[in-house]
Length: 372
Image (cartoon, rainbow, N blue to C red; front, top):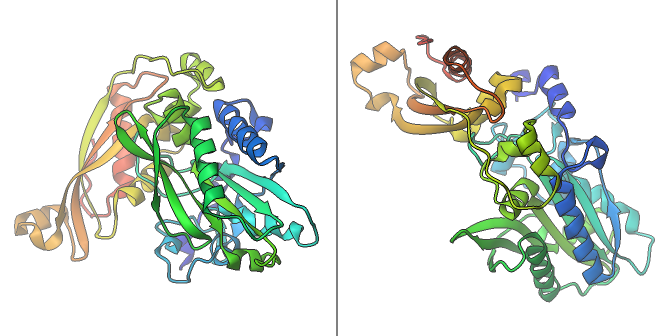
């Protein structure tokens, strides 16, 4: 990777100063209430001790990928998905990055049955819509035992307790899934509003992760579960827009302190802007979403969604269109619809046009600019 692939100091500072809604030291939030309920339910079920881990979100690439068993060529390591600070350091892409080091402290202990709770922000490149954020909150819940016999029955018991705590009475199912750091991986889906939605993923801790942390798999075993906290809270409260979780509007912010059902707040007027842009053919809604968030900075919450309506390759365009757009081989023409709607203030037409221009300039790579 070149230096252009690394985060700038400004972007690093912005990431590190973003409020972590899981941290009581940064103010109360319903995410903390839900997490406390989950931790209380699991630790009571297992009669286990509890240990919280809150490390810096700046982690060595080795901790985020290598120690968890990701292969060097795994697509998840690509710059398009990972926020690299240098070739060896990154902003963590999952809270699981904290666990290999956390496990190292158990090597000399006996009679261990402990729930390790590792919550916090993670950093990704994701689509702009009502259910995704570029810096979501996640929690890893790992049960570590000084016994080798943790099995699938224990895992299913954990899943049942988790679902009952997050969504009391909800129907759930599991499907097989592979993780490099678990054995017998499962995806947990819950039936909500007539459709199946993913809640979390889990599995038994992989022996190579235990060995890498100095624990003999013949003597140690455990469970590893990772869950997105925004999704869990939105399902629990019936929230339709992820941006509400950080809103300053008192009508909204006051509802983000408890697990009480969401009370509807009338949305503000919507501004729609359609743009025709030229981008590299490997761009998708996730990488475009990341560019938009970076370009808008503190105004990123104004973007409600970004949808690619059509995608036309260079060779599929008429010659006149190629000339008009200035498109080259290896590029595509996208028609993108942007919905702009602040959740706590009114947006004027002039402000919407200015935001359109910032977004357009950030994502369009063609030589012909069509600004408002």
